[in-house]
Length: 164
Image (cartoon, rainbow, N blue to C red; front, side, top):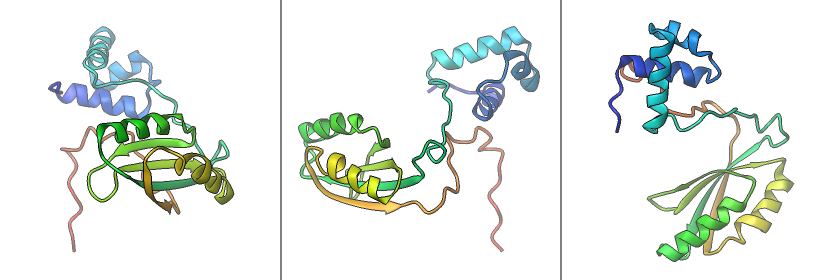
């Protein structure tokens, strides 16, 4: 784990808000010269803290407004069961996120669908056809409240709300 100082945290916070921020503007916002800021960003990238830059697309705007959280339990938890499932899930274009879980389910997936009929198709043709699937539970998201890509870099500066 790389030790991050206040300037690194400020850089990361600004990059999370706008990864297309020009280096000169970023440097000004964090109080560094452009060359020092560029070196810091390069070091954050090389250390793996910054893993890439991405456009955050709207599934809704792209015609997939339905978000389904799917819990999957496999028939077994051997390496071969997990590997076979993980290879198959990577091929499904509607699966946006897949986590190996502890607890009652083996995997949690976030799936995008056009509508209920489209999710039924995904369920039938993709998810239930994946190797080793014993049980699936689907929950439909009603509304997105928060969708962060990472922890707020100012986490230690923020105070929790007081309970009244």
